[in-house]
Image (spheres, rainbow, N blue to C red):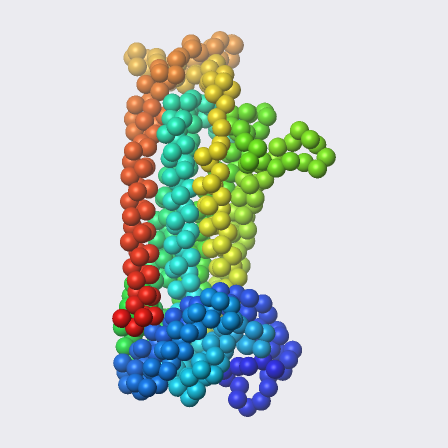
Length: 454
């Protein structure tokens, strides 16, 4: 028989229980630690509001601190007999704290309870994503610095366009990742608000210390309007996954580049044996599986984003059970993008650049635009210079050869191949690491104080 927090009048039909729970218990197990912490903060708030006696508060606190240890050890989990994470925890509390455990649900609903759990979980997971993304950006910046003066072709329409450099390419990918973190930060701002005290979306007829509870959980603020809390759930989940998708997209683009440029036809990059897999039938094959699976995961995140929009986009105000279906796309997206960034951070330092192939690819028609601008610097109008060089290209004339120093020297502006702006990039990465360390430490300190009662 499935235990519920709302039954009390009879057992739940087995078919209904199985259908409504689905695989939700699997995802709820991830929330159990956060449910314990949120319940600790809520119990402290009840005691401050004189809705929980000192003795009951002491019993509940002791049970919840023990629950944290039991979650870590696996002794406390969400079983098939529990409807959800909240049922599992409340049953544990009643067993250890007796009637005091039955008082803890005062002032809240499962609606604001699960939203608090999800926001704490998501905040922690976004910190992990940010850490992995900064690691990937740092690996790319270091790779760019090592190869900043190595020229190779830049491509448009998958055709050779103009001279570029390995440093410019790697730095561009690092900058894209850092830009993506701005969107992740905006999504985190939506997540970093306490919903506790909103209950089922209408508040409760008692005074609760909502700001105090939010602060004790390390939330940045309170989402004050109780009727706005539940409708924000799907919107916030979509915002998080959308921000994750931009990072997944850029990591997938990087992976695509590596796959292409390391192919035999290009040969500008190569993969060491540690980054390649073999074929069961073709002994010569070295396959870029790590990068192919990174590319594929971008598509998975896009699919999860579409799922979240489909679920959240059709709902009116208030809480609806549909929101349960948002947990898998949210959690899977957080997992996937964190793992993508970690894989890239680990793989990039091992990529090899074939200097001879790169040098051989820079010349001929690739220098046509440089020749146009050489004439422009000599005073020829751009359109006239363009037509003259184009006529030469059509007639089979090669552009005059240039040295690497000449090519780079003609591109002195910051952000170009002559100066990819790597010092600025390194500064952004360092600032990002400092900011993340500060925010993560503040979150950790708040939760440590909550557990110890300091």
